[in-house]
Image (cartoon, helix red, strand yellow):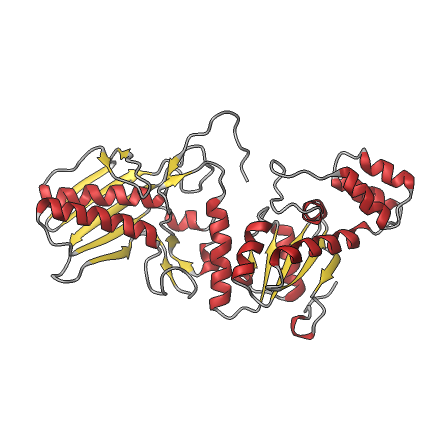
Length: 373
């Protein structure tokens, strides 16, 4: 995750807001012969941003407009992307239809807000575009039979940096955004992807999913159970975002896989594991070391340690198995958040991806490891 800059942060616009602006400009040009530039739209909460046009092309029965996405100070992978809307007059009675152009994905799996076969243009951006089309039709006395095609040049390459492949969205990006506004470092897009990953897992009959804090822990849990990619949630630091959603939308069995330092925070009750939002309590960790068999000297060294990694190394040198205790405590914290909705285990792996501790539900026959370490 990118480092949050100091000082006030500039908000930005979602892909959905940009697609809505481009769509309004193109449809207005098709109805009136002129492109509004800049083009102004109204967002769901009443904001009225304006967007400068990059493309403005008018043909026989079609028009095309585009804007550049400005995500503000958020480290959004689509920041700077060109969002293009091509509108065409549809067949009488066809209504407003949405289509995936170049760089916009198509849904292929159930469990997402739209069915397989649909363009990956989410319901709220669709609603925003329908609102703009309808308003202009009322203004110009037109019938709202419109084909809207959204394109994002380079979107397929950008999508490789997102969760779309795991969610069954192929061919490009999703057009997202519920409010139209990007709040810098709110991490809402990441948590949204976790939720959709759970939805797809449930819809495709997955009984076991795993949330991983990073690539090493993901590789470890996948190899351990032989899990396919779509059964692994890129949880990152957002264990709370994953568990709270699973509490309402459960699967049978959940594994949490991570390194020692991250899972110390979970063991201490933190549900956001990012270093800027939670810190290891070394006094509490010293108590855990004592509970694991550490002597007074080791506990004192723990209280003055700089990092959880240093504590782990001190415990390893003293033959004190702190990892097992942390796995148990982390599992208890996760279980309390899930409130019985799913069975849960916690798996700790080292920096080489070797599993060093497990606690929870993972020894039942139906979820046996295929590559135990």
